Length: 468
Image 1 (spheres, rainbow, N blue to C red):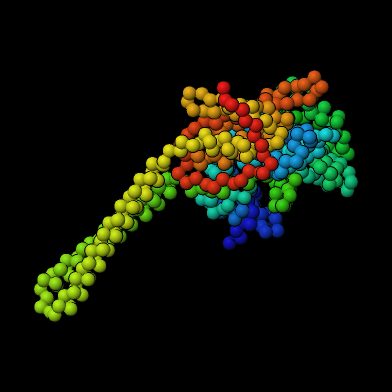
Image 2 (cartoon, helix red, strand yellow):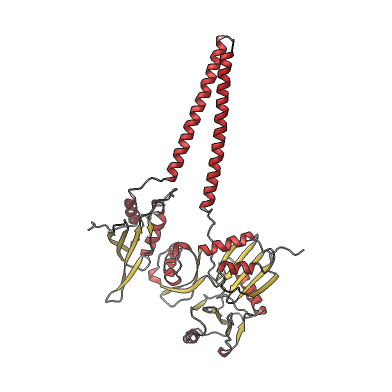
């Protein structure tokens, strides 16, 4: 009987899907591939790749070109002093405009890459949380656990042997995306991502521009598209042999703590509200049934005691004891009824949360706490439907995003829905810039179980002015 795989790697790339099973030492246990189903959704393509073999490994990694990836360069001065979490938030809001994926509904991963002097470069990959949840459920039903998801392009290592100290570069032509990657030794990866079809007029010019700026000792082309690129030079197609080598190399990188490429991890699974409602309803029925049985038992005990009292022909002391027993049982009945009333009231309050008239004060207080020092709030603008806009200026491009993200996290329980910051750069005569911003907050229903808000940094400030 074949041994169960330790790791399963699924690839959804161009018009191909593939699956490779590896043992604990990354020895190949099996490898399968076929044409990608036409018009398949991302999770459907993963399900098709998973079905190429039998039971999958305990750990499953997915390479899918359905996730979004891009290289981003930011001025070093604009992000100086930001923590890793703040940088991730800022890049999430910046990537939203390019990927079209809402930052608060996406998982993001980033890896530092080489950038010109005065800039900081990141390789960013973003995937919708809904897509990750669908992949997680499909893999769980097959007995595996989704560990991570990455874009199949940009393998940060050469496919062949490279002498120590020598540089290499590779041009990977995938469906709708071309990744140009180069590296010398252990130096940071040099990356250029071109979101363009391989047949477009400017495609080859963009690649040649990168090649001229990125010299290397050796070069390789890798194609995963149906069109022939033989006129571009020596091109390796993702055939069965090349695909097997490519997937082995990816498996070697993805099991490392620092794979050298952005790897998205699925968020913790949240129990659906329907399941919570089902559990609550089941618990209510159990408690109600237990209360009814207990009430019936108590009533029967009272009736029996009363009958015993009437029929008793005993001394007065025994009659007093029976009276005390009846009184205790009646007290238990009263306590049970009161407890039922309390439980009914608690459930009604849970279904109909109290209004929170002071949400505007909570918004202003949180804005005062969370505003970075490089940000100045000039005024509050309201409209008839209750929405409020925080408007002002920022000395950098990310402070407004940090403010919007903090407000969204801290005020979710009070019912405020915070939109991403709208920013408009204003250039000065000396070449410097400031950013006008507006953060829109819309009122909504408050959460049923508000979470505690974490305190803001002690040096946060908020400039206030009288509203017009």
